[in-house]
Length: 145
Length: 145
DNA sequence: AAAAAGACTATAGAAGTAGTAGACTTTATT
DNA sequence: AATAAAGTCTACTACTTCTATAGTCTTTTT
Image 1 (cartoon, rainbow over the protein chains, first blue to last red):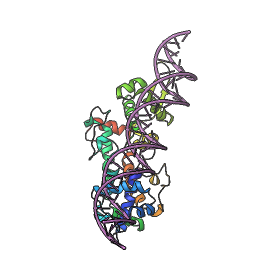
Image 2: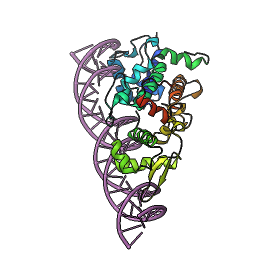
Image 3: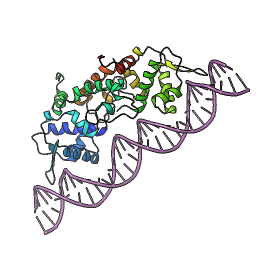
Image 4: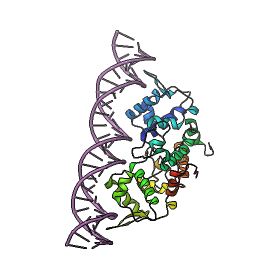
């Protein structure tokens, strides 16, 4: 299951994507609009910012805006920041590889091979779906990526 | 991430699948062979048994064996018993559907639509991969499902 | 009757998730 | 220069879930 953190992150990015062209959005407004606990959202936005996805401005009239095109922000990358690995077993992870505790021989492990397939199938969607796509799908029923 | 419970369950089913034709396997032996904590394994096997996947026999000479063909036990079903939903968001789950707390309008939710795609991609693998497939892949590098 | 197994329930400890608090820094406005 | 409006950063707490363990009971074989 996705953590709330990740879901909140996606919702925030979507909201900021829709806000493109307007003045930056304050955390408080974002939190209210998306029904996300304010202080929790703060942390999430910070993470996104430090990862280069958001631009922030302090002081009066400040707030958050996207630092990239919505079409260049992919869900797979967001998930990795907030939830870590996308694979269901550490030994099948591309970016967070770790040996499984109980694994005898990774090379011949049938479980691993299967979950590499799962990872690939998952990534085929997540690494190709951008915030722009998510926004598009909100209104348009017909969009197929 | 898969829970250890699920990983242990798959490993146990694989081991029992390989044991087909031989006398039933005792929990203790299984636990030692697969490096799974004994009492934890007990619970897992019980779950699998109650779900109809295993046959158990008490008393001397008893133990566990598969109650179905290894080719008829699919990973998706095992995961659902041990970890619950396969989808990454409750509102995208086939078998464990639940409304998302923060969701305004599920019908037009772009996040939901995307994660339904992810679910379908994941299931395409997990609902077609059986314990027999996992066993086959352990030894044979060339098997492509 | 004894021993060998599984069945079942309860509980404890560890880890991860969600959320909160508060003090600090930067920037704009007056 | 002072004030207010924002974001920054770190620490902490509460809660939940996961992992594992313990113990008692039941069934079956010898």
